[in-house]
Image (cartoon, rainbow, N blue to C red):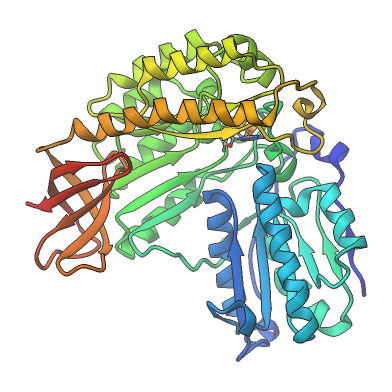
Length: 471
Ligand code: 5AD
Ligand code: SF4
């Protein structure tokens, strides 16, 4: 039977408050190992949320009997977990589909699937239905749990299966997970986003804000501790909104405190929207040493007129006020995201962004050229700035922010920093890991236990990394 559920933006945009049912993921006994001996190749694009979804997808595939291969040409199943955030991510996935078309011509029985954020786009699904009829199956961000049924249905009927829901479904707990890193683990705390920044496609591809129950989060973290994980990264599009949709009196600061009390050595959380950052959160961060002094706080622009057009809900002054409060946390590193070339951004507006960067001296910044996304309000705005001009702004912005990354690294010269050792590099006695402030450090040492947290003296500071020696 051919299943077709297409995404619909009107429905995706609705903001009714629903009660979400929680259901436990289960693979039917007769589905286990049906694909025994088959291989899969999973390609992941985009953010940590997608990376973590892929960790679930891998585990589901392996319960079905698949094992992974690094060689796409050899795989029996190729699955693309896609990203919609900017056009280049989009183009990369379509480029890959082009390669897969050739593969399908020589290897007819390879199964090709597409999932992730692009699957939630109306335009993408229309293209797949008309131009990519050979793609075997598509599922969205709200129904990863349906992967076993879709694969089996495909095997039976050989018809294209498209199952994408516009709005979020039940909250699925206890999905299996095959984690990429044995020392640090992603833990979802909230799904979706209700902010609807005017340039952003995420609220359409990931649905409304839904918090996971605190008991489920804490249980997951306690199990990670038993498995000797050293670090958890609490994940969400806007983690600071945690709890708002679920509890009267339990917010991000309460969750952070409860996670800190588990005693897991390192805690991080991404991404924070300045709007929901409370003073209580800052107090909790100061109180617990295992909450890492590193905050990602996207500013997007330093110009109030553009911030308003972006729908960001804060002014430059409000951002700075929060920024300075965070700076009171000892040794804190603050990173940000910045978009240049938003429709209507003038040279003067851009200069305000440069000025803000000179004020904040961010420890790290991810900088992007604005990319119009299907159906977003910003995509309907008139945009007179040429791409060449936008590229020039990006270069000028990068030149400014890069100098501060190096300065921020140089401040650590000759100091001892705490490092979670993540692995051995190619050279003998060379290791790498991340500092508490999330800086990459390459260092020398002897018999250093990988997976432990040790002290390293910083001997050299580069723009993107540090060099050092184990103490
Ligand atoms: N164009 C460019 N950058 C974008 N981002 C989100 N949407 C867009 C877009 N349409 C950036 C923002 C966000 C980060 C994850 O991606 O800076 O914080
Ligand atoms: Fe997109 Fe804004 Fe939500 Fe971040 S807060 S995911 S930029 S809508």
